[in-house]
Image (cartoon, rainbow, N blue to C red):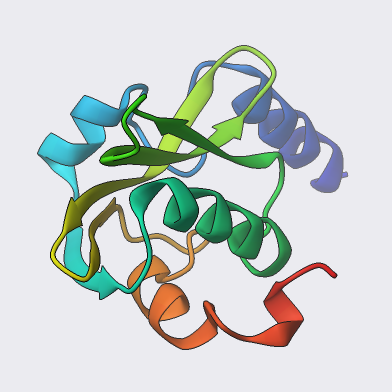
Length: 137
């Protein structure tokens, strides 16, 4: 009997505007409130790094309705990757990565919250970016 009210409460939480993985609803608010900020260097342009990370994460950092999208500036000098949980009535931003061209490649700054349903993205990028298991053929 206890299972039915709990199930209804869980469904109500998911369908409501309550936060599931992150209270942030924009990339700027996540940048301002991130619990983890890490900068790494990648040996490729922002225009190449952003979609490559998005594909890798879609294969190796999956979650319930997690979507990874890139926005690339026209001159390919900057890009932004956002990780979004798309719930029924709202979206939550749980990852923002800013890519900026520098000498010899790109500086990527990763912003995220900590949470049970959120992987450690800096570690994932550093260890799995070139992993064949995280690249669709």
